[in-house]
Length: 185
Image (cartoon, rainbow, N blue to C red):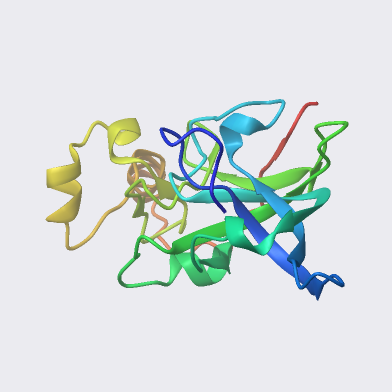
């Protein structure tokens, strides 16, 4: 939807209902999506460039403010897109505009930096423990990470060396407990 300031990106809303009044003025009831920078917590490092929050903020607008159509994907489906177009966005949280609370209020974290996944950032997966890492967090450039055929994290390399010294051979590690991060209001 068209913002009042032309220098700002368009507003994004989900059309809930379309009605016309007795004078044939078409109105739409919308549920607004917020961008991270519009939320009380602001934009954080793990928020993707195309991330939106589905809010509990409803409104009625003139249909003439609609500029076009976009697609707001689930986080899972967005992560699987081969080509992200200008009309593609994703949503993984619902946002309560008055309180600033998020649902869910927890999300899985990855890497030794313990940050949630940002689909804009490249990550590499350890073949042994299956944990995901940002290249910079394992002293690697993005270019080096893109050229990898195999990756074993430092912890697994060190564990394998210790097992070998004790006469044990490495074996696949089962999935570890999922780490979570709590969003604070």
